[in-house]
Image (cartoon, rainbow, N blue to C red; front, top):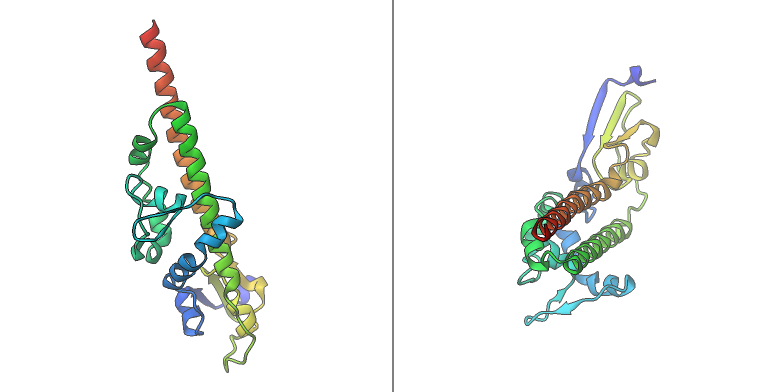
Length: 207
């Protein structure tokens, strides 16, 4: 019963870092660059190589400079979830153009970028090994937890019953997917509005 809980703990990434786990977004950045070519091949998504020898995928195009894609800067990963919301849809639309072919290529590139990020992020989380070991501390029965992490450190290291752990947004481990879907929906609506505008303009011109 929730009435028995008198202590509330908010669990963030600092908790996992305290336990020595490689869960920083800089760790994610390193994993991304080490595995991006392999994962792109697994997904059968075409990549390019720039003059500096960096792998360029649809991620670099969609979330970087679409006209001059380069290796993503550290800031993209250090503020990963915020970076996902900074999509320059106007510049992207300008690059692909207003034709139906261009709009189709835009959507294909966006989908490929999101597919790569889902795969890389998911694989990275799975790669984080949380071994069972004695921490020397136990939370008593009066504790309740809101967990903002993607990991199950509380369960494995502190034997906390998962029934008293509330995952923010019901399942915080799916937070990335929710962010991605929101961006995809936003851009899809933008593309639909552009198509509608083109159709109306062409109809008007013919009339």
